[in-house]
Length: 355
Image (cartoon, rainbow, N blue to C red; front, side):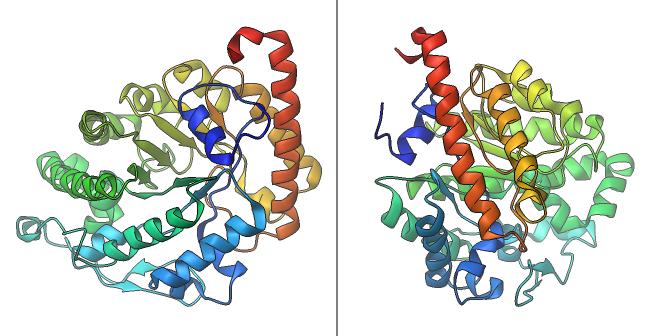
């Protein structure tokens, strides 16, 4: 199995097959701008500059997968929301489109080939893929339906609506699900698989009851829809999801990116054989962690997940802007070293897994 490419390692994990080491990557986020002369603002608005930043990350660290960074407002911007773009920080909305509920009826699903920065995002995916696809997998992320709904309505108002006007919340979720479906179709047409980011669906922000009533039905719907298209559907929820983990797995999601506050042992117990798992390394270790802290986290993740499930070792979420190159280097080098050692031992102990 020597000589496996990064892409083959990732594809094998998606198929829940074993190779000579555990695949490894990070959610690079806006940090990739630091590897170029460009600001975060520039890479969020210029496809060529964004491509250059992602390729700089690829050239510098040789990850098994390049995960395309974009902000979490592509969809709402295409719907008419005005954004503020600081030079070297993440963008944020200037306006809330649905400060009045009646405006929902006037919103139209964006055209991915024309509206907002969605064409820019697809162009970045295509440009980076053209350079790395022979050896490296490509990952991406865009907002899920709850994320879109919250950015359209505002967090406080939407949470209050779940109690005072649940019918409106369902109407809004039906609309945002159609937005996701339309963007997903465009990504599939371009040769990519959709990947939902639900930054506001963690148990630190919402109750399990809200997830089950207002979010899970639409995740179920999207999983079924994209499965019918022959596409993998990935999901990332920022923060802790232990109380809804079984619900998330039961949606039929193909791939789950797990943030560090969530329990990796619980997910392996719940989702083994059902879902490919990625992540769980604390992002703070890339900026302030010690080498021993990073090594223990890598060791614990691999020992917990690599035998029982298709597993990709990665940061739990996007790494901080003040991450350091020496910490990223150490993450990749130790992950490859220990990931190879673990698989060699596993092959000796359970050779049937590698046949």
